[in-house]
Structures are given as structure tokens and as C-alpha cells.
Length: 240
Length: 223
Image 1 (cartoon, one colour):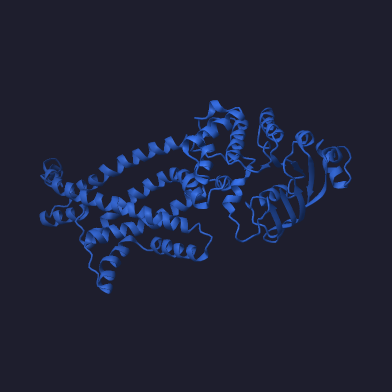
Image 2 (cartoon, chains in turn green, blue):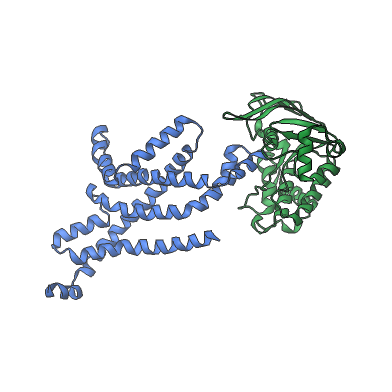
């Protein structure tokens, strides 16, 4: 589904990603962990070109992101993204937030877009909030709307950029629950997270990133219970 | 002195200036509304140009904004009405010249308002729009601009009031707005005191309600 080859990303003179190779299979849930500043968010943002790729290649569903002829908007509509700070559109109701993509990008009819969106809101447990504005929602509710908004485009892959880091602890569970449902339905997911419980339970594979490279990867049991790399051991000992 | 004091209560000028004020204010308001309207269009174009990644577009917008903001509107009006028309042989009337001057002048200030408004919107909004597949133009139109515009309303209102007062300098190009008419009135009657007080009131009757309204809008937008 996703194949990353020798991915490099620099901001000016600052090289953040120093050659990343990774692969994500269809229906796989890959969790990316690592200390802050390790480049894991940047890595994720390269996957839908929110960051320009400096060198290397990313191929999604057979299409190279480095192909100069790529239709970037079409690609992004197939790669859903959920942000740490939700980034809901505050001037639109919850329903409008979700219908906007199908209406403007996919030319779905208004009736169909609304039906689809209401179904998705129901799925994340927020159908009663369809007609309120995001400002009146809790963080957990906002993030579930953001998930519904991304799902409305029927993406092939979902990217999560620390989706629970900005939430009050008691609200984390709701969002993780919605993500688990999604994983169980067979969605391909790449999740940058600090929720080690989620990574262990739901991750098919865990990537440990530090200093712009993937230091270690493997099934969660291996990474959490038997880490090989000293940096992984050090990181896990600090947070667990 | 005493004579002057009694004049305050008995002056015929209160009544006699009224037709001039009504007629002049009409033109003042027309020039302001039409001028600021086109100024907003200019300002939106150049304000967005200031956010452009293209260095050429950015440079053009910067030159326009700095030239206009760095020269007095009186000079701009003189330049437009006398210099440009003489040099290019275009003859526009005072009304057209006044509207163009306000549009160009307000446009430069509004460009900065637009730039500030758009820049004040969190970058995450643009990213969220792009991430669902909207183009950058669509994201600007449906997501960033509506939010930015709301924040632009108070400074736009201020600019409207400034432009309204700026129209008074068009007296120098014989545009028959309220200041021009009142100056004529004074030179005919030879009595400046009451007519100029009335002229002040003519502006205040528009600007004070506008300011009150603005403050109310500002307070509502704050919440």
C-alpha cells in the first residue's frame, strides 16, 4: 500500500529525516513511536505531501509522490489525515465539516453527502451533534468529528498525527475507541502516537524512530518486551 | 466679541447651510462607498499577492502598497487629476478622479488588512483543507477567507471612516463634496464660524454612529 524508499527531508540546513525505508501493507496498522523531535510527525506529513519531500521516494497504491505529474489533490483525497489539534473548520457546523470534502472534491450530490456524513457521525457516536458548531464540543468529540471528516472521502489509508496528545486524559478513550473500530474494519492506518497501550494492542507493527531514522521495528511484543536497540530501551524505560 | 456670542444664537447659517450639507454629503458618501468598494477589491488582490510564494507577485504588491502608503492622499489626488490627465491626455471628471483616488489609497491599506487577516488564521486550517483533497484556491475560498473576513471587519470599518474623512481633500480638485460646498458658502457669505461648525457636524453625524456600530460588532466578534 505504502512504500517509502530512502526518504530525506530537510528544513533549510536542518535535516530532519535522514533516509527512511518503510513499508505498510494493506489493512495493516503501523504505529510510529519515538521521542519528540525524532521526525515522526514530519515522516507522517511527507506521506500526503503536507511536507515537500527533499529526496527519496514514497509510493502510495502504485503512484509515486515524486512523479511531477501526480494529481496531489486526488492523492490527498485518498489519504485521510487526523491532526493533533483537530483543525476542524470553526465557521461550519459539524455536519458541514464532514460534507465539505465529498461535495467539493468528489462532486457527491448534497443528499448523498449528507447521508454519508450522518452515517459516519453515527459511527463515531456524534449524530446528535451534527448541527452544532465545533466550538461547543469537547476535545474528544472534536477529534472524532475530524476522523469522520477524513473518512467521508473513503480514503485507502488513514494517517494519525498524535491524535490524542492534545486531549484531557479522560477523553482519550473515546478517540482510541473510534480508532480501534476503524482498525477492526480493516482500515490501513499509520499512527504516530504516545499511547503505548494502543500501539501494543492494535499495532501490527511498531516503528521506533529517533534522530531522523527508524532505529528499530517489529511486532509490538518484540519492541515493548524485548527491545534490541539501546535507544529503544532507553526511550521505553523513560515512559513505561 | 459680544456681538459674536449673540451670533451663535441668532445666526441664519444653521438653516442656510443645510441644503449644501445635504447635497455635499450625498457626493461624499457616493465617493466613499464606491471608492472603498473598489478599494476592497484592489486590497483583496494585493493583500493575497503579498502572501504569494512568487517573488515577482510579492514585489509588485509591495511596491504598490509602499508607494501609496508613503505619499499623502492630497498629493495622490493632485497627481491623478492634474498630472495623469495632462500627461496621458485622459480627461476624467473630478468625481471619477476622486473615486479612483480613494480606491487606490484605501486599496493599499486594505491590502495590509487582508494580509493580516489571512495570516491570523491558523496554518492547520489550510492543512486540514488540503488534506481532504481541496485545492489551495478552494481551501482559501471555503475555509480560510470566511474566517479571515470576519476578523477584517473591524479594521475595514475603520478604513471606511478614514476614507470618508479623506474625501474632504478632494475640495482641491473641485469635487463638489460637502467640504468644497461649505468653503464656497463661506467665501460667498464671508462668515466662517457657524458654517464650519456645521461642516464638522456633517462629518460627525456619519462617523459617530459608524464608530458605535463598529464597536458593537467588535464586541460581538470577540465572544
